[in-house]
Length: 156
Ligand SMILES: [Zn+2]
Ligand SMILES: [Zn+2]
Image (tube, rainbow, N blue to C red):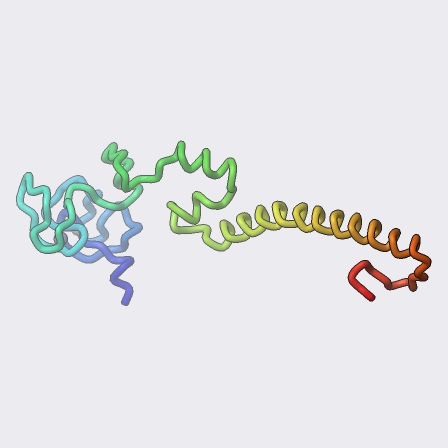
């Protein structure tokens, strides 16, 4: 069930860790030599741009480090500028959306942001309730009613 974390060496086709940049079986940096599909391990002919087995482009390895070393700035890599802009407004969200990591930290930051937005709103509600309460109770006092300590405008 760990197949999600496994890839095939593009040089020798052996299974290897998704995070590894260099194959531990043949020692070749991933993406340099494309003899096998990184996704399914199917053999790839020179200049072949579509794996006939699984349909991925064997020359566009979805591995951030390799993408960088290949100068690949396609959609597979993180759009750093966009992440920075989004992170400015909602810290932690980019890491949730793109990096697929730091999930707990990201959730914590997003949670903290929500709290800082929600708490003032709650404060505003309290202020409004307080104003209505003062107004209503003031009218009741004017009508000769005596209020006990815990009378609010909603209590009879
Ligand atoms: Zn290899
Ligand atoms: Zn394939």
